[in-house]
View (spheres, rainbow, N blue to C red):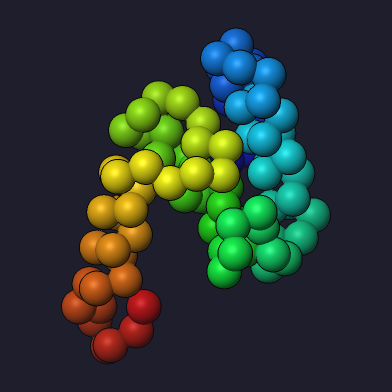
Length: 85
């Protein structure tokens, strides 16, 4: 989440590398600002991209696949201690 994976994503495609680099920069400079996905902050965009990378091994460039969708659904429906999410 600190930009160390830029070379890896850029080797897959210049668009993925650029989107990842922008995501890191935006999360560092304005973590609570609105990201390219409506309803997500810059920090969420970066974090969810990193989570999705675990499954797909590629940067998601602003689109959600089924793995990330299931993860986010599980996250939102979890029975969190104290009732907090």
